[in-house]
Image (cartoon, rainbow, N blue to C red; front, side, top):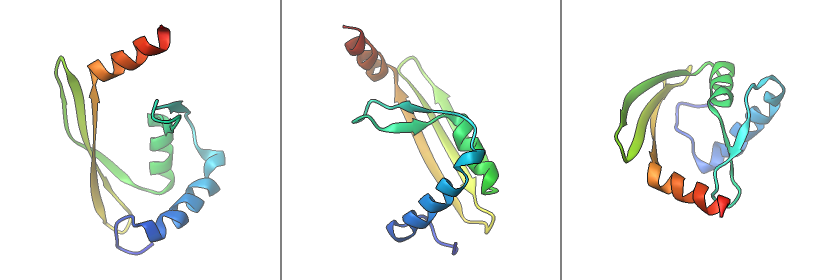
Length: 102
């Protein structure tokens, strides 16, 4: 791939590359509760990162009584760097779990 970030045009190529290594990926997917969307667990992410020779780093993490936040940086073999953030609000997670139980 070129030295550009992920775009809609090259997403299909990336998907094909991911599908071609599915037999060597470890881990599982879980239901994110957003329209039945399946989300990869950390083992799947690490397997893909290893396969595509991506360097990952934790840029920032924080946990309070209300939420947990992590910022992760990824560098590709051609030195393209990208960051992403994940925030889990505990009250939202608890609401979803309690609604499934009742």
